[in-house]
Image (cartoon, rainbow, N blue to C red; front, side):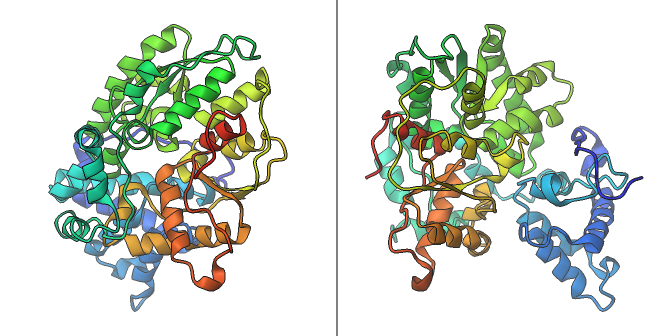
Length: 453
């Protein structure tokens, strides 16, 4: 055994079919083993709230050791994990292939799977993860849904907090009457035959968020790709299952993985690349699905053909070269690199993309936004999420750039909420009042989209 995880981290498949996976006593024994390693190391103290909660439990005992902490006290530690993977990817010196075999995020995932199996995940929490059902229903009454979900609505938001536990002040995604998949049928951009990358073909996996909540990301991605000679198709069979993954419902994730793989692999067979428009979904397709269903060759094949949108365009720039037409933008960009983009281990591709814009002024922020997907909007978590993301908001204010960008639209919205809550002495004279996906900024530099109002 060598100290310090000198090799590249590797991950083991999730053995969720094994009855022992759901055995509470065996889970708690493994948690104690891992938590004791974390206690003796503590390198992750500032990554998320899981570790401070764990260390406070230990430090509050008379001995200062884990053996005095009751197993019933572990729940808050697991609840605070946002499955961002940053401890595994960037901090922990004991990840596999190290003999200690520490995978904290997947241990927390197992904890949630046991909670799910035992029926401890609430009804409304499960309903919030039904993104396709909710998105389809809301798209038919988008103005009403957006009115009801607005943070200023003092009629509906208190009720939502009381019934479903969603914080009154947490910003919720808006819905559109016309989804991205529907828009894509009639809005087909003309492919630039003179672009250096002409001949490439890509199928865009729309993702539930882009499809129902922000179709502009998909529309502008298609325009940028078409300008660079890439023929595109849009496919959306179902959500990638990240919301269910967060609750430990691995069976539901496996069903979605198989369904999406069946829909997208015929395109792979015809020479198409697969592009995911949101980092969390790209991470699921590339890395998490093959660990959930390790024996599924269709999922494995799809994993090898999948790219994040920024990763794909940077690849074009390096290999064939981008099509001309990029123009400087007034003002710089504060770019938040999301955890699920970093966890793909492909480098800061969003930063590389934006630096391809002439005279680019990109200030990179590489810290947790605090939102944690559905975790950060819950009433018991929202104050913690804001506190966790405050350093990012302060950095955005200090940068005083014209644009704020985040690869994760939910993280971007959460950062904006953090900016709004900064003390007056920390606020810049002019700060961004909205967050954009990097592809939206790149499209503006190409003249393919309007400037934000």
